[in-house]
Length: 412
Image (cartoon, rainbow, N blue to C red):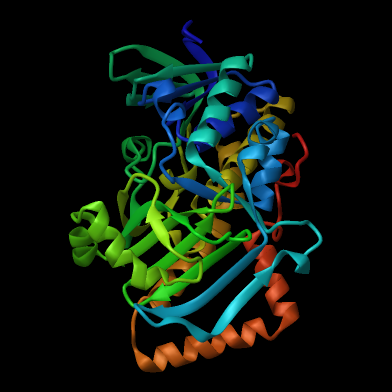
C-alpha cells in the first residue's frame, strides 16, 4: 500500500465510500486502480461511536456482498423491518394519516439495513489493503488534471505526477475533478440545515425507521444495531438550526424532545453532533474528456429518503460494469464510447430520483393547511393501496429499473 503505482487504469479522486467501492469492483474485474484520499486512512475507521450511519437498500447490500464487504459488516448492521412516514408538529406527535411500509410485503426480506460509517469505511479500508491491483494514497488531494488522447495526467497537491486511462471524481458536491473538467452544476439550497446525532432510548425500536415531516423540515429517526440507539437526521430552517446547533447538549436535547415525541420512552444524547447545509446539486454532465463523476460529485440530494449513498452505489455498479466490459472487448475504457454508455445508464435515473426527492421536500417542508390536508390524505391513500405501497417499497429498496449486475449480487 505504500508503493506508488505511477500508472493505473483508473485513478479515483476521493476515498469516502463510493471511491473504495468502485476501486474494489474494478480491481476484481482485472483493472488496476489508484485511490487518492485527502484524509489519513486510519483516522476515520478508528473513531468511536458517533451516530453517523447510512440506510443501505437491498440493492446496495447486494453490491457490498458481491465485492466482498458485506460479510465483514453484517453483524454490525440493523435490518429495517418497517418504515413509517407521517406529518408532525412540535409537541403534537404524528398526524392520524400515515404511510406504513412492512418488509413482509416483499419477498427479499428486510427493506434495508442501517450501518454506521465507521464500520463500513473500516471494512473498505481493510479490503483495499488486501486487494491486489488497488493502491491507496492517503492524506493527498488531486490538484490538477490534463486529459490526452490515450490517458489523463494527474497532479497531486504534493506535486507528485500520476497517470491513468480514466479519472473518476468521487470528491463530493464541490468536486474539483468536475470543476477542472468544465462541468457546471445546477441546483439550489433548501434553506435548511441537517442536524445529525444519535440518541439512546428506553424502548426497543423493533427495526422501525420513522420519518416525521415537520414544518421546518423532516426528522428521520433511524434504528441502529442493538435496539436502543437511533441515528437522528433533523432538517430545520437554517437560521433556527444554527441557534439549535449552538446550544449545549442539555438544551439541544430539550429542543429535540418535543419533536421526537415519547414513542420510544425517555431519550438521551449518545453521539457527537454534526451539521450539514442542505441543497440540490446536479452536474450538467456525468462525463467529460477522460473523466467520469460518481456519487455526490454527480448528484447531491436531500437526505429526506436516505438515498444519497444508495444513488452513489448505483453509479459505482453501472460504471464498473461499463469499464470492465469495455476492457474485455479491448476498447478504450476512458474513451467517449464507454463514458457515454455510463452517462446514458445513470444520468436520467439519478436526475429523476433527485427531482422526485426535491418535490417531496418542498411539499412537506411547510405548514400550509391546504397542502397539509392534501399530503395527509395522499399518505393515507397510498397506505390503503397494497399494490401501490409495494411498488414504493421496491423502489426504495433499489429493486426497480435496469439494474447492473453488482446490484443483483452477481460479479461482473
